[in-house]
Length: 509
Image 1 (cartoon, rainbow, N blue to C red):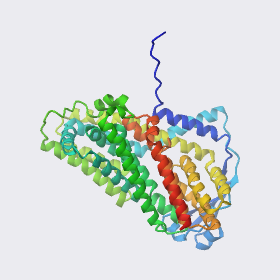
Image 2 (image 1 turned 180 degrees about the vertical axis):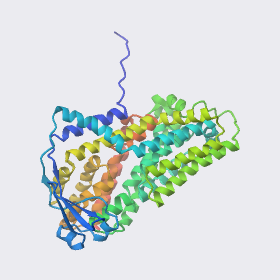
Image 3 (image 1 turned 120 degrees about the vertical axis):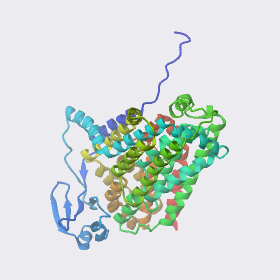
Image 4 (image 1 turned 90 degrees about the horizontal axis):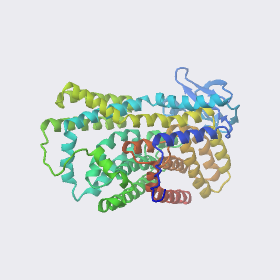
């Protein structure tokens, strides 16, 4: 019919993107041979090393440095005994292809479905944390404390909006580089998004400030125990080797990210039509600001202030526990559950209103919680199909004969690929370092550069990998993955160039 409007096609949701990736990865497992490295793991109960061969056969060996030397694993035995190396380490030159697990049509369908359920089961601690957090936010919102607090904050932000981006990205970036702050940042989105909107920015700016902080911060890890420290130990070097270059990378990469975000944010603030999410601007305001009227002055009661203080203290305790006490999501969930019970006495809500607000708030983040579990399913398919070691073996063989500059630059891209398939930074470190680190000796470069290539490669892919945290973050604000890609592409290219320069200079120094 002439003059009829064409139907607008929207980009798939986070769920659909993950399912598409899951299907593609599952298809790849039919073409990539299955294989395994023999692994070595310390058994503290027996005080023995347990070697597991590709065939599944296990051998027990004395937990001594001599045993490690015999297997060409250049790691100090104390690192196994004190728990620093807590995952099975791959033994160099032991890769063997194994018989691919039999999967017919029904077996493939079963794996496709089971991996998703198993992913949710494996992520239950994160899911519980997200739901409790949503419940707490629902209660705080019901008191009116959030609205009153944001109105006061919006007055303070006038003319100083840029500092919001600088402070948020820098602080979260510090968390990423020091203790690997990642999933914990989910807690900040519901609080920061309304503040960014009141500052005149859009929801994509809020995601950028938070997610670039955690992704670039973790990529530029200096003393992160889950990546740099464990990778250095697995490579047989001290984690302080190469630390100055990593610190300089953090400064440069975070600085570029902040400037990049501010340029976009200020363009949006001056002309909202320039926003990549302009088509959902009103919907975002309705969702995150509700009926908040900045023209009206409302009382910021003592009860509301106390509720916000208790809520904020939950974050302080969370950060301290993660950084200093080694907490994970079970402990963090307990903290916010405790906050919920404290709010019973300060919120001033009737019992039915309190419960309804908690349940409603948890329901708002249910989609986010399920996305976390669904993303885990891709890794489960990789593990059950035994193709990760095959990919590792293929790349290690291809790069071993290159000259030093080409070797380290190509290794960076290798770790981008490996980081896409193996999302666990500690798992990738222990799997790859005993194999990749000796290659540094062959081409005559410092093993610390291998750690850098690993850090920067597997960290950088986190900016766009659907199997990582980005889809979870985007689902918090209902921003499409396509819009994020459009926003981050130029920054991605700039960071890649920066990394290649750093790696090349590192070889020549």
